Length: 314
Ligand code: R5P
Image 1: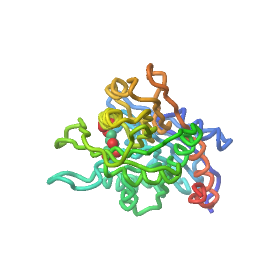
Image 2 (image 1 turned 60 degrees about the horizontal axis):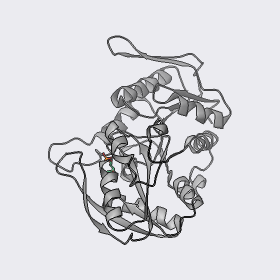
Image 3 (image 1 turned 30 degrees about the horizontal axis):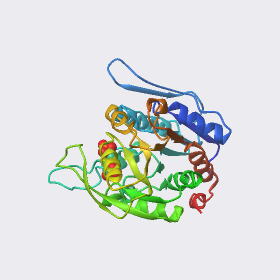
Image 4 (image 1 turned 180 degrees about the horizontal axis):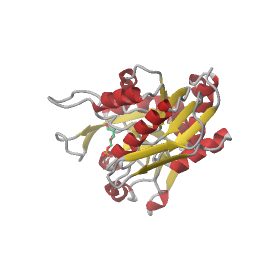
């Protein structure tokens, strides 16, 4: 059994790491993590690391490649300081959409990142709702994938919607929508989304399922430009949905996403705090943030004490 628990963070989202530590009722470990003027990253732990069970909480937010590099260097520094076990806590796993060779001569970047983490010295990974579950298989070390779906479903249950229907934004999201509809005891529908080549713009023209006079709840794993969800909102309104809620786990939200989603066509937008988003940026649409810090905190406690992580979702 590795000894004392220690939680550290880089510059990904300090507030989130502090919330995790508050839940664990322990202080966040002290570390210097900064960039020199030549953009080289420097890391130094200010606490003893020997034999400790170290969790490095680092949401990979913009600038993504810098935050990822910070995490890798923090893992290396912890290893060299004789940490007993190192867990990379990545509430949002970057490059998840690059998980297969779906066109000639492209990388599988999600797999490359898995390799980086292992080479740096991570013993385990803790993450939340991967873009595709198969990414778990890119790792040769244990990976715990938590899910925010039960928490999001619970939120919608508390709204007591009269006629809910869960909507996936594309065929790839159908399983997620199905799981959520099971939790809400309602049906689900699928939007047929298309992109042209590697263009970020999304088009939605076909809907499988019925949303007329219903309270549609769009669920997606991540929102970046907002194009996918905005196209779905418009389509659902055209097909007679009386309200359209938008929910996502990872709120990446570019400027364009705020422009597209802050429209009266959206009834409410719901997302988690795996990424730091200021909800007051939405002026026309109520925005609700559900915190994942308690769930991550509970998972860290269970991993540290050898408890079941799966039991968190029973
Ligand atoms: C795609 O497969 C994902 O599930 C999301 O639908 C996508 O990442 C959203 O991107 P955007 O907001 O840029 O349309």
